[in-house]
Image 1 (cartoon, rainbow, N blue to C red):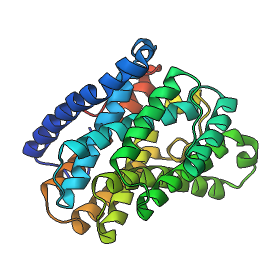
Image 2: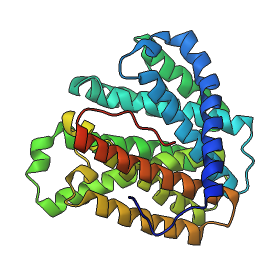
Image 3: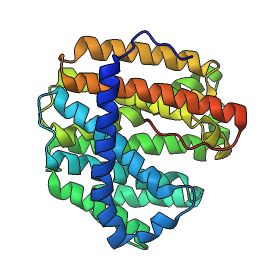
Length: 308
């Protein structure tokens, strides 16, 4: 039995379920057309990779809707398209970092830094073509000269680079004291999740007041902590080091982070349907990822778990 300090009403849970299904349908249409044109093979990849990409994009779309509606922006067709594209871009970028070995990881970081600094990206295969097409469509929809959006994108890249460096330089990291290790891992998780949602909010709500942006940053950090806890056993198999995998009492730590973040959001964000959507989504994601962690701990192997 999983209990939290805040429990959403059944009415809100049903609303989020309906919103999640709507997001899945929208991202399937948006990304499906691009996949069929540029990288149909992803549908045939083992491990439900295409479905995982759609789920990542649907999660991003639901979070984007919550962020837009929290600040009074309509979640129109353009914002829906931006969220779907951004989710697909994040999924592919993470796969380049995690799924093809250390040399590929280092090469991707160098090449993506070149993309950010020069605008140039050499396309070598259809997977990279899909990534570049999605990124180009995002860039076509939003003014990347907007200072906060540019800073958020580059900050996200630097957070990914620092996080990856912990894995690629594991002996150096292991030589640090325990307190310093945990501080670095917590900072990396916070920055990965926080900058991810900052980019998202700047895509869909470019005039978001700063007094709300930092609260959404904390929501993004919580997403990352929840994700890392749910993926703990997969991360161990791939030798990926995370804060939630290293901390002594992960469920208790995650529960405290969840309660603290939900309190901040409910006290600091304006009372709105968007705020409720964000909080209920975080609640459902928290519960299902804890269940995923427990399932894998008890049964072994990798279970497929999403946030419905």
